[in-house]
Length: 132
Image 1 (cartoon, rainbow, N blue to C red):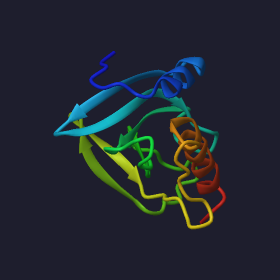
Image 2 (spheres, helix red, strand yellow; image 1 turned 90 degrees about the vertical axis):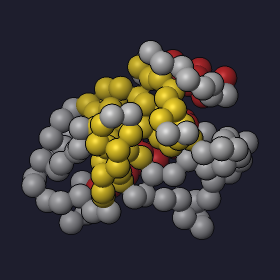
Image 3 (spheres, helix red, strand yellow; image 1 turned 30 degrees about the horizontal axis):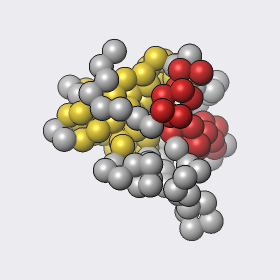
Image 4 (cartoon, one colour; image 1 turned 45 degrees about the vertical axis):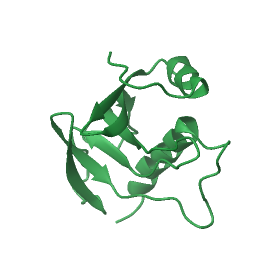
């Protein structure tokens, strides 16, 4: 696994404690964490997917925003997933889910991290299945 930049140690410990296969990649000066075989709840066309998170300069004070999936996810019921597009990274087309924190749920430096963001991703995956 590539480790082209280091995450804060608590982030690495969290990913390892969840037994997730992950790496850090820099492509065109963009830093991302790629997590492989991330579990997806029932209701999608697959059980696992790779995901990546864009890590901005200044992280962990700077927030993580959105999530990117490869291969693209689809709902099993055939309904479209809202607010998605594609983006090239690391030689692949990733499905970008445009999901953001709100004024009621802002990024909290010193508290929020990859662990809390992946918790949001899991909520977004569940919530998507109840809309439409």
